[in-house]
Length: 367
Image (cartoon, rainbow, N blue to C red; front, top):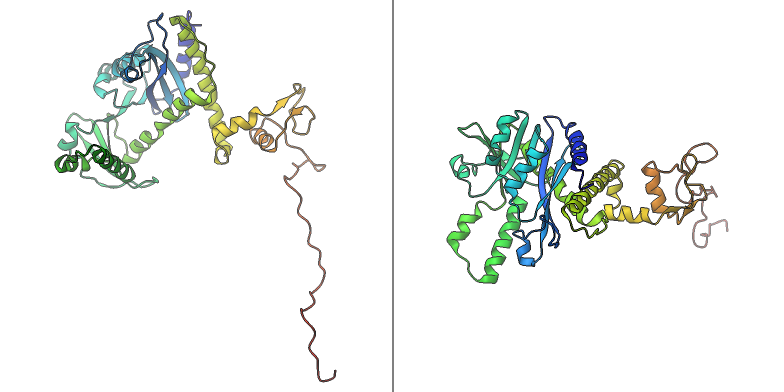
């Protein structure tokens, strides 16, 4: 598979062709340990130098609206984020949509792609020392953002060049960052009041730059939804149960990562299906897989799979309930054709008349 990359390119192109111009595409990468010395992909990244091991960099494009990865590509571990992201966009022909990247991919690196593709837009965070924060007075907030769980201040400004800037200050994040800063100063005994006052006003601050005139709430929700890609990377490294292939050559790494991409797409579809059925309100994704892994079948069903057939091995209650809610097994039906109610049936109350009053009856004058 690694020696026929054209097949993978066709597969990615078909997935990207379904993207509309209004969908948000999150682009981010993750480092994966690969200590091979016989290929050109394993290298020392800025993080792995401290660990003393080599990495490869895997970059994904993720459709926020559909909650699925669109395409992926492997880069050497020592490749700089900005240059790798730019090549990733060009190689995969991402020509429409709104790119939501991280601070490692500034908007200036997208200048050529934006000129060539009018349907391509961006929403990228800027660093807290950016000159536009002071120039556009982004610390003078317009109000409190409605419709969010956190208390978030917001401001929106338009620059002379026509770019839009959105600033947000999360009060919860502000408190957390201030606490971490003071604890760090306490451990090192190097508190300085001037430095503290200079950083204090920017605790919890998040600033974005875009070429689109969005509402502040839409821009903030894009930032929140981008963390779906981070959660996907977490599943990619832990919950997908990928087998260590111990591959060495460049072709083997490319082929292995394409298979991993397919597994990630399947995982994303499973998570979305479980979320639609409200199963993630009762179980975590790991608990969901654990329940399903304990259920086996002795033989394949000739017709629709039913919970009442005798071919199940270890049909635990929670696991069978998950299968039924996902539509993978038909629940046990009663004689009336309706699903059998779960649990022990309730007893019908029996009327036994009024209770006898407690104690000895009082004597009357006739007695």
